[in-house]
Image 1: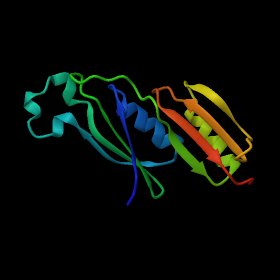
Image 2: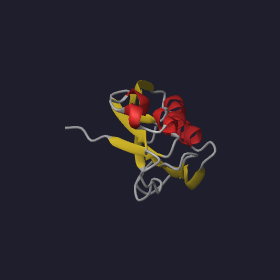
Image 3: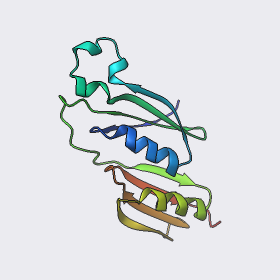
Length: 137
């Protein structure tokens, strides 16, 4: 079994995942648009360019998402966070600094009583992140 985070965006999934691929040094392996789905002729033209599915691979981990269709309610990403566990403080600092570009730091990346380094932020796309390094390397 594998648990995978699946994020929903309002019209920004492509921009977000392009940003995440750079920040996390991952590779987008799937990017499908609503306009590629069966029955897409019935969709409004402005919806067809949005992402119905995107998959980002980071090592042996996966992050996936889609755009929420305009006819469905969307209230942002709330009550959860994407948590990243890193092996070195330097790797965590690099990722934290990359993700915070244009976002809001909620807790600086620093030593805590449970970890060598930990930090929390909300990125420029509204996604909450936690970066954690347990090892003092």
